[in-house]
Image (cartoon, rainbow, N blue to C red; front, side, top):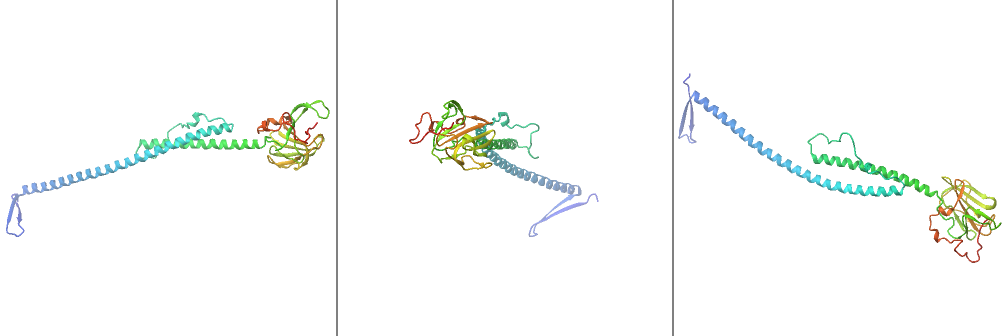
Length: 320
């Protein structure tokens, strides 16, 4: 049994030739082991070569994707710089508007919108420095935009308040026509010829000339009042009141809400008056002040009682 032989016979295609190999059992085992080893080695080499080829292909694809991502990040960087420039322009506009609204400027350290504590990180995954930097920049831009929106809301609110205040300040001329026949301050009373204090302005104008409220408010008096004749008093809030005397006709009633520039009466000569004119007063907390201090128009262009000749056939209207 130990000397048992194995034969390997090879025949040609047409069976005309025959080759026979005879092996001992030991040689047959060695040959079989060699064949198995050769097969395993071939498969191992083939697998290694294939894996190297596939690995190189994946690596090339990853490099191409990374390059595309870098190009996208570069484009984002350009856009971010543009947004940062626009935010800088908005900050300059914000400073200008805050000055106009009488608000303090935002300190530079506030505009930096820094954050404390642990930095916000990207979601779990491969760490990409460019992506982390982009994330930090976008978070900072978001904080800057929120700060700017808050500031603009504050400015808008303050400007609304200022507009309401301006609407209730007596900044208009009460008559579009006419000329100043007597100013605010000490003067000679036309009736007594004594030096007395005149609490308002006298504006001479033809009878029936429209009289406008110089600010928005509420009529608190409308009727005849001693030497003032037909008389209107308007309360504008904040301690401001205006008064209109010697009217020919009153066109509003007590308690009526009126707007700035609204016609409330007509020039007349009722009460203690020498001729048709409007006696106009501005009172602050009950004290008469010079109305010209509140008129925003160019007063140099107004016809004045001191340097302008009165119109022909028109008597200067003043009150005592």
